[in-house]
Image (cartoon, rainbow, N blue to C red; front, side):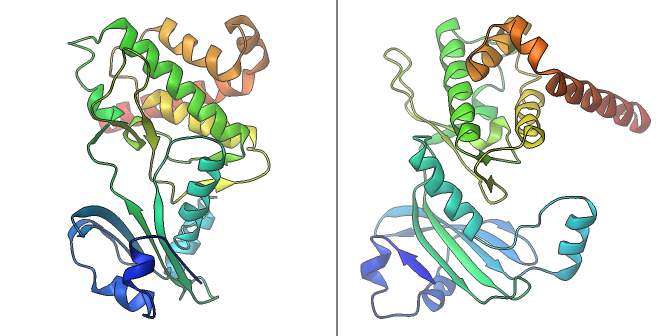
Amino acid sequence: MVELKEPFLSLWKGKDAFSEVQKLQGETFRQLETRRTIRFEIAGKSYFLKWHQGTKLKEVIKNLFSLRLPVLGADREWNAIHRLQELDVDTMHGVGFGQQGINPLNRISFIITEDLSPAVSLEDYCADWLVNPPARKIKMALIERLAIMVRRMHQGGVNHRDCYLCHFLLHQPANFEDNTFKLSVIDLHRAQIRNAVPVRWRNKDLIGLYFSSLNIGLTQRDYFRFLKIYFKKDINKIIRDESDLFATYAKKTDKIINHTSKNKL
């Protein structure tokens, strides 16, 4: 199975897409035993390639024992991109996908997406907020946009599984004056798609986002604002109705504190 969009549809017409993909050269961003990510250029435009070369049995067993679903190929990210586009959630633009083989241990697949540069991750954009607070308008705009994006994802049956500030890119230049700035969610290779996101997985995304934002100077009021926009409820109703979310948060907090204390971090 191969799906191509321009310019690859024309460039590789009549050719074997998998052979052409393997010829691509560029800057290596990640190199694992069965996966690699590179950034390359075609006709002056930059793209990312993620190449999946099967899956090791030990990796599958390790993930299953950890009650996690292993990454078996590029199809999950390709499908998640299209689902988010249907939900009007800004994300990557996929221009190429291919998959060969039935057995997930030997299956070969790839995905090509456009480079979103110039853009900066929210993790980097907010890194100095603790000592150099942003204008209130900017902070409020980002909190609101982030809450709406994550709500649309979850309402549309998509949970990220790596929902952290580093996986949200703020396109540059960012215009906060008329609220036309663009924020895109990336790295969807572990995303899950269902008719409805289970509460457990919804909470994991929300808590992941919370813990990734702990060191940027946000206040309790800021977090409550996010929750009010996400749930479309006042905070008293959220506290009453979402006991599982707060219980999971407390459990994870204790786990982190114990780990930090044990390892003297």
